[in-house]
Amino acid sequence: MCTNGNRPGRLLLALVVACGLTAADARAQYSSGGYSPGMYFPGAYPYGAPPPFRSQQSNYQNNNQKGSQASQQKGADGVSLMLTACGLPNDGGNLRWPWALNLVGTAEGDRLRGQAQALCQVAARQAQDGKVSPQLGREMTQTVGQLRQRLRVVEERLLLNHSVYDEADNFLDRLEKAPDALAGMAAAPESGHSHLRGSDGGNSYKK
Image 1 (cartoon, rainbow, N blue to C red):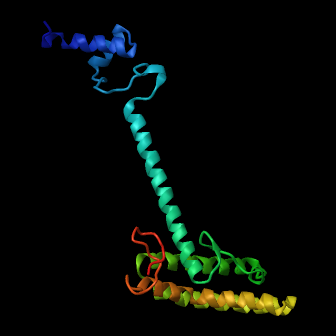
Image 2 (image 1 turned 180 degrees about the vertical axis):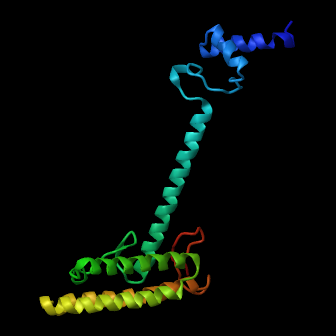
């Protein structure tokens, strides 16, 4: 018959058998309080496999990472769709600039293109959430105005033909109007108008 008095002996035996400890090591583990149920010891699982709780934790982290990546991709697709609806060609939300505007070089040109793109992306994300800040439109107007000035300098220096210049000028027109266009999409009611906000939080056309 097993009694409570035999419990320490059973625990020591379990440590010796399951963990591959010597009798002396098992006594030291038990006496120091270093053993607790579920504690992981090398050799306690076959072929060095990690204990089950570690595997479950790893699976949980992997699933969270995949969910986060899917959510980010979905958001990028929504931004791209909304910018396309504004007449702005893009790749995943990154604007495809006309050739003439890419000729606006120097660090200042890079800064202005980057700022305009960021303003578009922020406005598109705000439109997904239902409201676009008017400040974005004011900042876009200033940025586009500076790009126009530099485009004229490029046109005078390189004698751009009319079609190349007009392509860039029309692009800047659409770019300047983008925040207002996106604000209109965000303000459109659920029925009676087309807009780009899907019922699942993504973006899709609705009638």
